[in-house]
Image (cartoon, rainbow, N blue to C red; front, side, top):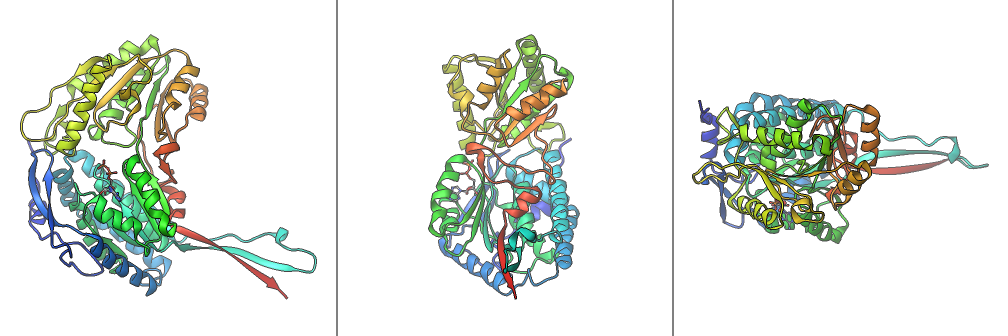
Length: 495
Ligand code: ADP
């Protein structure tokens, strides 16, 4: 039976969706709105005020004022930790509404949305605990010279005003993944949600105020990437941009941020390989490989979109993944049986379908092709290709949909060469029962994340990010916090 969206979520959609700037909910200075859709129906669910460059400027000034007044950093570390902890508690207290809004605006299955909310609460608590551990280091005796004694130490300070540009594929998770460490570091934040999914960001901003984040420390400015996003990236009053999105936009951001040499963290695209050795436990491997590409309908930056399996097990693995794909139900995220929701937009559906056509025209063999539900929702069924041709576009380009490209391969050196022969380097899966082999392969993969006998685990204690064109820097863990801190070296000559 279908779970209907909770009344609270429906009521929230009916609100006037204004930006959140300081303590205010001003109308956008553009005077314009944009529609936001439910991708499962293709229907408009809300209209949102559209921020432009002038609104971004107001938000930057509000964020700077909060920083200058030490509204947040002036609190004790313990008081700030309590606020972040409370923010996590309030996410849990509002979990149903948040998860339902996420399903309504993004289309993801309800179970995934619920996980995203509870994981976000965990991330907030992780960074609540990290606040009291922000400290520098002291130079040792080596700093001293004959006749000149020194005391030298470092301090960590918030970078300042930070622009956080989040994508549509995991709106709540990517929001908190950036906001939690930024707040822990003491920064003032301006969040620009993706134009497809502005709703939960606005709700998360309100909940932050309720948790005790002082006004101005977290501002939410919905709008379009090339307008609001670009204004934020080029604004001289912004000290850092943390961006999650496509590699193409990531490169534009690097250029646009050059004006005041903003610090930039980028979490970008991927074309992640899964390597299945001939000794792999296939019962464990097959569902992991299948969910590696099917989770969130393949709209995951680290989706395991390339499969390299030893020819001894190749047919079994591919048949198993096809069987898994045939059993997953596509539909509304509110149906409890749904494993695959829609993709985000008609444009994205078109893009994925175009790639499926490209694969066919490149001569790859379609081993499995499902059927998408009829109607106005943006559904794309899973497709599995077997591709033996090197250099084809479906094996090299990020599709961001439920499309797996499988290739049989026996020689591990060749597998590693091909697995690494990509401009990306975000994730990689390795399936083997041999622990030595697992370590050796993990060491050779040019990838920020390697998962052995599992796929896609993300945890706040572990840094997350990419090699090569998959990004700059790391999120999560202490590295994710460092990314929002400046370091100062202080030298004191002692007389
Ligand atoms: P996709 O193409 O998958 O939608 P994008 O990388 O375009 O992914 O979008 C990710 C985020 O980046 C969104 O919030 C979007 O609005 C924003 N964005 C897009 N273009 C720009 C830009 N030129 N400058 C800043 N932000 C942008």
